[in-house]
Every structure is written in C-alpha cells, then in structure tokens.
Image (cartoon, rainbow, N blue to C red; front, side, top):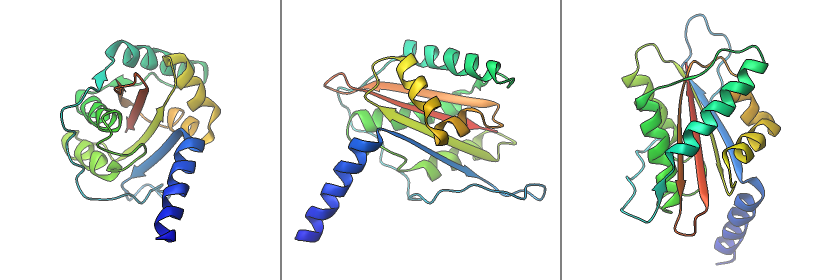
Length: 180
C-alpha cells in the first residue's frame, strides 16, 4: 500500500514540477551515426472518449508563427505544417485535455510510427508538450527556455503539427510534433 502512495506522490510532484516535457525519436539510417531515442510505451493509445475538451486552432496558428519567427532569428528554415502530423498532435492534446491520457509523452512511439509510415522519407520525429500556459507566447517562451524543448525547436526538422486543447476547467494543453 505504501508503495502505491509513494508512486502517486512522485507522479503528482513530477507533473507539478515539470509542466513542460520534450521527447524525440529517430530511425537510424546508414548515414546517421547518432540517434536520439526515448523509451515510451509502444502500445496504441486509446482514442479519447467524448469530453468537454475543445481544440484551439487560432492558438495553434499563433504558436507556429512564433516558432518560425524564432527559427528565422537562428538562421533556420521555417517549419511547414503537415496534416498527418497535425492530426497526431491534436489527437494527443485532446486525449490529455480530456484526461484520457496523462500529461506527457505516452504513446509517442505510436505517433512517431504513424507519421513515419504515412509521410514518405520521414525518419526522425520529436515532440514538445506543455500545459497550463495561458497564451501562445507563454508556451513558446517556456519551451525556448528549456534546453530539451529548444533542441527540438532548433532541430533539423522541416515539418510540424501543433495541437492545442482546453480541458473542462479551461486549462490549455499543448503538443508540437516535429518531423524530418
């Protein structure tokens, strides 16, 4: 019993402290000597049940604009949205906002497999998630201040998809997936 309580406390502390999380994955190619991988559950995440979570496409557009402005300042090419990646980012965000999936990267390896199987030539993916920010500027600033998130934002990615959703208490959840 105490072990269960301990894990519950650790989980809540982790979610409270973290608030932002980044994850990446890539397939090793014959020309790629370095591969970043993250171990996550490989089973397909359940689709979210109907809930009061609502998507916020205007915030998604604002985040893309802010991310591309930041990339331009760093001499990097703008990211282009892709409907497959966008669908995966939104699905994950709605699942988190509807509390069907915990905040974090559960199912990232599945999302990555979907993306790499549906978009020819894509061999690497990464993901940033956050919750609780109140605006596009606030979430992007938070990601840029975090080395793991910034690494994804500044990565050699060409494609992206962004999902933003509000839960029943109007708390915002964010997912940005990167692909190359």
